[in-house]
Amino acid sequence: MRRLLSSLAAVSLLTVQQAQAQLACLQPHERSIVEVAALRSELMVLATGCRQDDRYNAFIRKFQTDLQGNEKAVGEVFKRIYGKRAQQEHDRFTTDLANGESSAGMHLGTDFCDRNSILFSEVMALPNAAALPAYAAGKDLVPATVEMCPQAAPARRQVAADTKRR
Image (cartoon, rainbow, N blue to C red):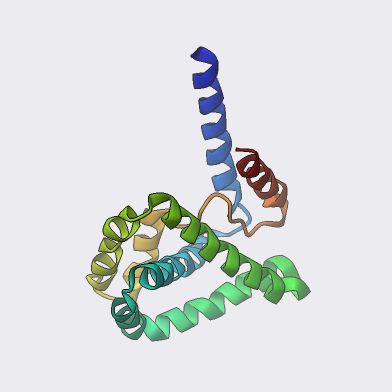
């Protein structure tokens, strides 16, 4: 039993360290930009998986100008980090983000929609787009298996390998 608890504690610590490393190369304002992109992605996955397109469209309409600016800013972050590979890495990140969120949703099963639909109500209650970064930061929406930083890639591969072994 002790061995099992020790193993679980070690895996938990590793996961926390990997989650912190995934965005470690970002400056604080860049982290906010990425977290808002993760919020948008989470809501898109929620809308698709839970048939809540109307709520997603209302979110996009309410924050459209700021979301467009945020997407441009995400592109600039990738240019800073990856240079000529920026678009390729941005596309990979976007796909990995949606896949990570979808995977989490599959693990919750039918509970996913019930547990996460509140996000739409909460985000639509925000007074303006300036509140999006703080809201997104409080939701921890970037899965531990998704990274942006070049040095975090080995950790991501290790998590994926560990997942396949189970």
